[in-house]
Amino acid sequence: MSAQVDRFVHERLPLVSERAQYLWGEASWPQQPHLNVVQALFDRARACGFADRAFLRSSQRVMTYQEAQADVNRLSAYLRKGLNLVPGNRVLLRGGNSISMALNWLAVVNAGLIAVSTMPLLRAKELTEVIDKAKPSLALCEDSLLDELEMAHASCPLMSSLLSFDRHFTSGEVFSGAASFESDLQSCPTSPTDIALLAFTSGTTGSPKVTVHRHVDVMMSCTAWPEHVLKARADDVVMGSPPLAFTFGLGGLLIFPMYAGSSIFYPDGPYRPESMVDMMKTQGCTVCYTAPTFYRQMTPLIEKSPVPSLRLCVSAGEALPLATREGWLKASGLDLIDGIGSTEMFHIFVSSRPGQLKPGALGLVVPGYEARVVDSTGHELPRGQVGRLSVRGPTGCQYMEDTRQARYVQGGWNYPGDLFFQDDEGYFFYQSRDDDMIITAGYNVAAPEVEDAMLQHPMVAECAVVGQSDIERGMIVKAYCVVKPGVFPSDALKRELQDHVKSRLAPYKYPREIDFLEHLPRTETGKLQRFKLKQSPLS
Image 1 (spheres, rainbow, N blue to C red):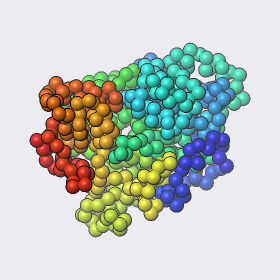
Image 2 (cartoon, one colour):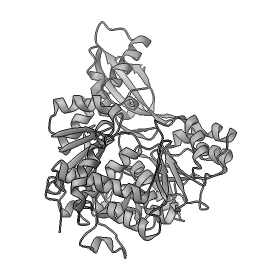
Image 3 (cartoon, rainbow, N blue to C red):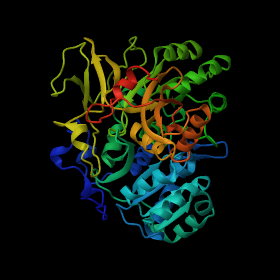
Image 4 (tube, rainbow, N blue to C red):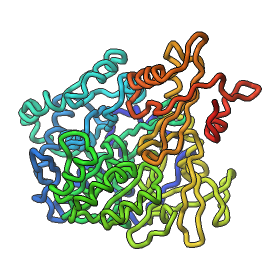
């Protein structure tokens, strides 16, 4: 029976007939009356004898599993009793990868609340969209990131409270306040199908989609790729650059290490290639998660300064070029574990495996999942033919109140929006995206969102944005602009437009290249022919 009193998200889930078919095998979690994923992970650590092992690390402190669980329980009690939140309320989390961010995420889910993590780079406009859709009761924010959130809160005042990790939680107020709730220092008895988190992702329209993940989804994801491909160990030290606000980062840099009993090192600030190689060496890193762009940048550095402890390197978030894989292997002596996953399905479902690499192939389907390459009608194609990837397994897409559910899930199968072909041995070969999403250095950018920002500039009459192949970033955002009469294109105007977009959207979304055209290619009915811009630059 559900413990979540606030039914806001439950009432906005797709109809049962519109949801993916779940494959759970012999797993017992879906059949249990109660499952709180945070409590289950801490219980597993204790049962395996990891309670006194290091769990969360930074340059300032090290916390054991037992210490972290005590803090999580106190924070959970404060959220429920001190702030009067009820299970099912949404809590917005905004922070970089840190011990504080990890503890607060765990506490929110442990309390039966729903975590809504946001990217640190989001601006007030984007945060307003998140607040409007998720309608959080509370926001917990890193002190240095409060400004944009406060502006969003002012324009969309749906939250009752906005608290700082640093000023509020480290002052001792939370823990002293929670002292009166000693009898409540335990997890909320959520059901397996209660909601654990909402993850936001942009679609091709630029309107954010809200993906829903339940406690059972997060728990089941631990039994798939981490168990069968990664095979992490309790003595592993995990590091990486993906934000905890991404499901790739949340899994790789919090949930999956907990499942294995590993420890995670969080830096004091954003990683740079030089600092990451240096910290991997000083911290004895054994498992690294990052995007191909970062591996390319780290390749000459790790060649000069090897990291002997490193044993597993995971690449995801964008297509992995063969040159990047070969360069990293030569420099580090390690093959990259390449994988494809999605926010909708939480994490990786097709992956390469150490010792089973095939040149040009992404990899094999992860045990627990099924994957096919199909035509436009959903029928499986012969091996070697390019078609749409369809997947089903222990996780699946559930959008919150979004008509795009019908596009992503068809006949019980998930369609992530990628084109592949499969060879006779079952290896999947990535071809491209089947929509206009631009994936640049591991970040998803929706072209219409950038176009909208560009069109807000008073000198721009028309604009079209596409992705352009790039050796360094995989793809870059490229804009084609038609300026208004009397305006003369120039390099100075290009820089002005780039700064204009940076001031309105997350910095990684700005167009790195801008071409000026006399007109955009359109059909007779006025529809933009974006494919012509992708095929050959116009001037």
